[in-house]
Structures are given as structure tokens and as C-alpha cells.
Length: 343
Ligand code: GTP
Ligand code: MG
Ligand code: NA
Image (cartoon, rainbow, N blue to C red; front, top):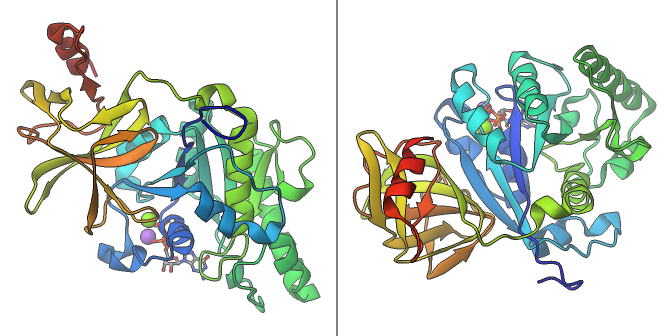
């Protein structure tokens, strides 16, 4: 439980947007990693997950001098591909999240997969924040590394400000054409009806503090019920992967509940339900990407929300995108097997 007695889980935030709008780079900027440059062709082809502990978010938002006393343990961010051929992965990612970041390149505005992503979000009534990315590409932009956006903008020349306002206005108009009211977040007086825009640069970090703080504060303010921790396990398989030394593993997002080493689990398989038990529960280090090979932390148990790699026997034919079930002492295995296959 947190200071005021609330037992909240970490919000899950999905990053969506057109190919190369800067989704992975934004995460790299917050993590201090270089995942994007390691991707084949600079293209994301899998769903990823990264956990940001509250203390790192507090650190990163300090300059906003906000009362950044966070009530959630952290933030779990799901990265998705923007390439048109991966619409199933965008749908999987957006289906899991509490809130989303829709990344729009300020130089290019709305693109087909921006609109596709918007549709996914509005169809499921998922709240989101627009990250208007690549502001550093505005001709003459003076970089103010990791500065809050208001401060960064105040340091720009009149010409840069004009170009920025022009780009912002264009995107606002394009979003309006899609039926959405949006406003620069610190000017937004009708949060909730009017979606927030946070300008960012994933290269020099301007606006990153704003984006993080808004994400956490907004979810804490509007989603308390939804974020209240529940024991009932809710868990989705993101990816099925062979990992050297571990055999076939599954990357999952645990949305609610606790997983324990040794738990009997059921997942949906291509030839029927797979019943097995958790051999190891692995996570990357905090602020590291689950989908990138690295060293893993071993856990006896893990509480939601978290991105987890599970090793167990017989996972070869697991179908990604389906739910994982834990068999409790009083559960009827047959009922769970049936539920697992209905996904
Ligand atoms: P997919 O996952 O393949 O859809 O792309 P993405 O949205 O994750 O974009 P990615 O992070 O791969 O960035 C695409 C290119 O844009 C890379 O070359 C990045 O270095 C560059 N880029 C991303 N964000 C910024 C930014 O804020 N400023 C500048 N100048 N370049 C950026
Ligand atoms: Mg990417
Ligand atoms: Na890319």
C-alpha cells in the first residue's frame, strides 16, 4: 500500500503511432538505452515492455517542480510496431493498456497508422495523450536537453516559435477532422473532453518530463478504481520466443494478481490447452526492454503490473495474444482449459 493507504498497481501505457514517428526512441530517451539502433532496419517488429519504477519517474520529472509524490509503484510501458503489417500487434498492445501515448511526428502530421491507432483507441474508449514528437527538427531549434517543454519553448527564437505553432496547429486541425478536440496540455482547461498534446524530442529530451508526469498524474487522478490492485490473475501472452538456455519461453504482461514460481498455468495452444507449471519467472532490470536479449532477474513471485518472461515446459505451441490462467487449489482444471481455448 502507498502512503495514503491505496493499494494501486502500476498503470499500463501503450505507445502507438505511425512507423518511424519515434515510439521506440522516446522510450530509449527515458531508459537511457539504445534499443532502436539495434533493430533490423530501424523497424520494431515485436511488442516490448519496460517497467519504470516511481523513483525514476520522480527523478525525471523533478524539474517541473511538481509535487511528484506518486501513488503508483511505477509505470509499465508497452512498445508496439508502427509498420502497417503489424496491425495485430497494435491491437494486442492497445487492448492491454490503461492509457496510451499516440506519437505523431510534428514534421509529417497524421499518417495512415496514426489514424488506425486512433480508431483502436476510440473503439475501446481508451484514454490517450498525443506526443508531438521530433520538435528538434524544426529549423533553428535550440536544444535544451531534457527540459520541460514550456521552458524549452521560451528559449526559442520568434521564427522557431512560429514554425512550432504552425506544426501544432496543423496537427490539431487534422485531429479535429478525426472528430477529436486537442490542446497543448498546459493550456488545456477541459482535460477529459479535450485530449492533451505534449510536444517532445526523443533525441534531446525536451518535453519528456512533461509526458511522464502527465501520464502518471492523469492515470492516478482518473483511474483509481481501475488501478486498484486485485488478486485475480489477469495476464496476456505478448510473444512466444525461443531463448538460448531456456527453451521456448513466453513474454507476458501481468495486468493484475501475483504469479509464483511453481504455479500451475494454462495457456491456449495450437493443438489444445497447454497445462504446465512455471519453472522460472524472469524480468529484465528496471528500465530495460523485455524484448531485448539481456540479463534477467529471477523472482519467486511477481505482483502486477509487470512484463515477465516465463519459462516452463511445453510452451512451444502457445498462441500469442491469448490469456494465461493460473490453476488455484479449488479450481476445476477442465473449466480453465476450456476458458483458455475460448480466447
Ligand atoms: P517503428 O517502431 O518502426 O514504427 O518506429 P518508431 O515509431 O519506434 O520510430 P523510431 O524510434 O524507430 O525512430 C525512427 C527514426 O526517427 C530514427 O531514426 C530516430 O532516430 C528518429 N527519431 C525519433 N524520434 C526523434 C526525435 O524526436 N527527433 C529526431 N530528430 N529524430 C527522431
Ligand atoms: Mg519502434
Ligand atoms: Na522505426
